[in-house]
Length: 269
Length: 247
Image 1 (cartoon, chains in turn blue, cyan):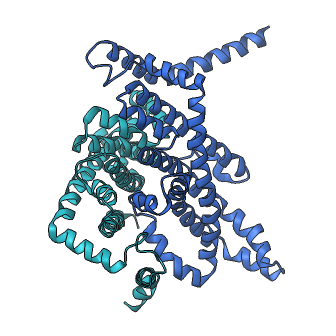
Image 2 (image 1 turned 60 degrees about the vertical axis):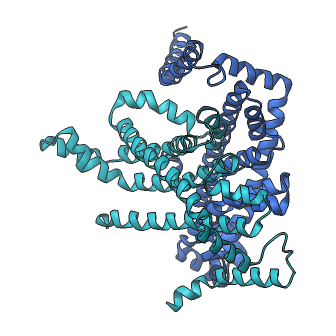
Image 3 (image 1 turned 180 degrees about the vertical axis):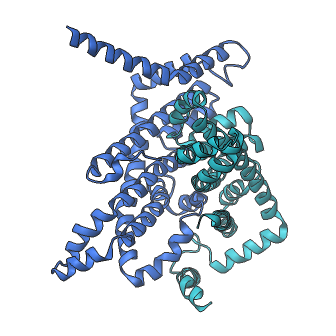
């Protein structure tokens, strides 16, 4: 009995702490509702929170939300996966083979800091306005952080480990799989952690500019019809998608790196 | 000198292949104008003054938004690390908005602030503020408490501790956060101008592309890419110089 009471009070304490911690969010949400109802702003400029949430629920019930969400996530994740696979492969080649390093190093060091969204009209010219151009734009944006992180991680591997393994008779492929990849993994994952949110941002931008379903396209359509609850509902839905993506990457990272001491440290991103 | 030249030879190769491929017709001129045509278009855009006019509008927006984001973001981040009530109030909000793809704010900014400068400046400010806030917060929280205690026990005021210890110690992280924000500011600037604007480089790209003037469009695209690259390199140089005392 006492144990049950203790557990209930633990649970209650945790819940209370949760409410206190998210107190400011609740205040902001209530403030939004009150401000929207006060008549200071027209419903066009600031729809009430309740009408926006009603729209989100409506989108969810009609299935439109899940259609848009899956289209956006499909583009973002497909582009991210291609960028991840190609970026890691290219990064290892750049770090290990001098001629490839010579060829790609200046291209990567110029391409990485460059605002690649500027190439969007070029991609539209080459690949049209459908998934091909959207996904290639996502790959083009997301691949650079992966390459840079893989090169840095691979070059940072302790040379003695590679020499020892080779002198013990390990083949190049074994060295790659048993030494380089595990040792470079934390940095590669950091690169992937930058690349996935980038992929989502670019997916939304391409949808806003080119249309063709997805969360970004629905939002800009609502904006063209001056349907502001639709625009705000779009923001709520996109924010939720972003949160989902970032939290799942963090979970995967912790899972993959249980063996690494870094996991105990607080993540900075 | 020759080493630098050798290092950047692959880039020259790209332009040579571009020119050769388009001149010989292997690559269709509709897909890619010749490199020499792009250079000619760039020169005429420069002479006509359009490029400078739109670049000035874009850079003004970028600097205004990023400058505000740096001032507000650093202040908020340091205060969050330094004053507990501020942290309790703002941390949940920052955590909630940080993962949001900032480009989602473009339609709202158009709704609230119209097509002019204000909507782009506020968009860049909001988008860039969070990375700066988080890096300032992490940097200021990571300061050795021993340093602060020693300074306090030697009679330093809170203001002095902030100026002499916390800010210098947090500087590397703050500067790294600003670098992220700089890259993000270009992305937000170009994408918001591509969506809707009346001037700016993104608007110019969209306008030239819609008109089918592809040589000029490529010239402006390469200009934007070059500006982003140069801004990052200049910032890196400044960052190295201001952190030189740490070596």
